[in-house]
Amino acid sequence: MKKTILLGTMFLGSLVFAQKTPVLGGDRDAHGCIGSAGYTYSQIKKDCVRVFEQKIKLTEVSPKGSSTSIAAVIFSKDMKKAEVFVKDTDAESIILTRAGKSKAWKKDGYVLVPYKKSGYQLKKDNVVIYQ
Image (cartoon, rainbow, N blue to C red):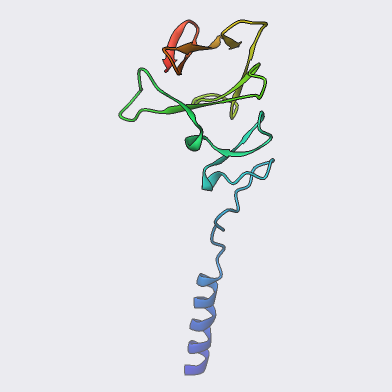
């Protein structure tokens, strides 16, 4: 009887430890980017990037809540396209396009324009949301 209770306890204990635990890095997206490590896919770079490590970062102008969010910008080599990573969008990023010699990149109400000497402003429907 004691052996049966001991074996039963051991069996149940092994079931508890055998439950699946999430594997770190097991959350790869369709492009192979690991979201839990901070990576997201860049359409311009055709590679996984960390948004918070990008050179061009814009700060939210009127944050909703207690924390301020950051938007990152990646330009194509020819500077005709700008990929913007913004929170609260359905897509992971937005590709803005510059027409001709214009100094603005645009798409769907979003406009990215140079601001001051080395910065940029991102507007949505003519309202500055990041700079």
